[in-house]
Amino acid sequence: MKYKAIIFDLDGTLINSLEDIADAMNKVLTDKNYPTHSYESYNYFIGNGLRKLVSRALPESNKNESEIDRCYEAMMTIYGENCIKKTKPYDGIQALLDELGSLNIPISVLSNKSDVLTKRITQAIFPDSFEPVIGLTSEEFKKPNPFTAIQISKQLNCTPSEIIFVGDSGIDMQTATQAGMHAVGVSWGYRTKDELLSEGAKLLLNQPSDLMELF
Image 1 (cartoon, rainbow, N blue to C red):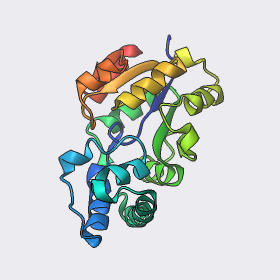
Image 2 (image 1 turned 90 degrees about the horizontal axis):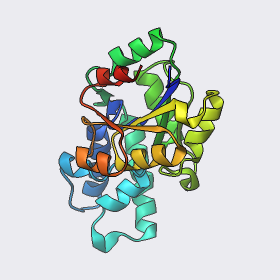
Image 3 (image 1 turned 30 degrees about the vertical axis):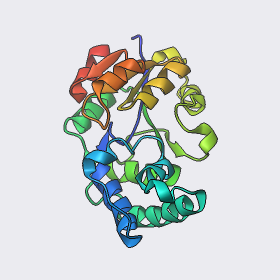
């Protein structure tokens, strides 16, 4: 078997969390009397961590560091209390995970969401399915920095070339490429197929079961 393990992105790849994220940020914006945004707009705010999402959602005239910090803190409080209210796996994800488990293929999660929330949400929706589960602990290691992906490969006792990296954004494809992993994009996430292909996707999945073609 050419590939021995898989690293999955979380938001937009395994789970649809957009509405919970958008609702939390829109509550912050409403409390500040700032304009809110549609769910569709949040497709383009997600991907670089929640602090960056806060910055993108704020009005241009209020994008100073102190206001971003205040709104980020408020958003994290609201989101932390409601992070699995509407969030759910995409259709076919659980069946894919079950099939991978039957083949004893190690699966892990790497997200730009905070490490605490990444672990909490993953454990709530997919109990004891992934190892390791790693979110953002430092801006220094945010994807597309490949450092953490490479550390995961070492933990899984695989070379990077033996790992499939599955994600829904150009950032995920960049991470995979820079880590020397096989970049696979998903069509059901928050970004377009064109973005995924232009950023290095070697394969696009139209449904989760398509991933099994690599095994």
